[in-house]
Length: 220
Image (tube, rainbow, N blue to C red):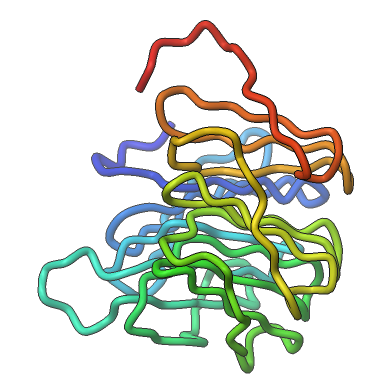
């Protein structure tokens, strides 16, 4: 149990090493090291809101976020740890909020954010290169299956997809007017995206067609 008092925005379970990380407002990172242990507060060294995290092993991970709007100078930030969250270093500072991060190994990963932002690294975040995005509005989630195949979703029901590591991205028709906040694929064909008004959409052909799943949940 954690008594934080503010929003948590993401949680990641590093299953092989039994570690759980939760991130949220005011640069807060909590870590749990396994069965029978308590959550330990690890501050990321920033006061910005953290929206997403990804760890590829017990030591190496990233968190991303943005300015909470109280007059600070940081609108978007990528932070990295190599010691399991004990210390954090800033890899990138942007004028655009960053909403999600996904790495496929210790070297290659992507972040997405406001105004269709997509950045890509092949060296663990030492450098981040801009990729051309067909999205014009905010992107809230990204997932890659491997170094080539990935999706990102966001505002105004946007879904974009790449099969070449983001060298090119193409738009997909989501079939819903609702904003999308999460995406997850189990292979190159089968995946789901979720969003506002209890939206769940599902594809069995890599996103060529999406179908809304009826959940019997109330809107909102």
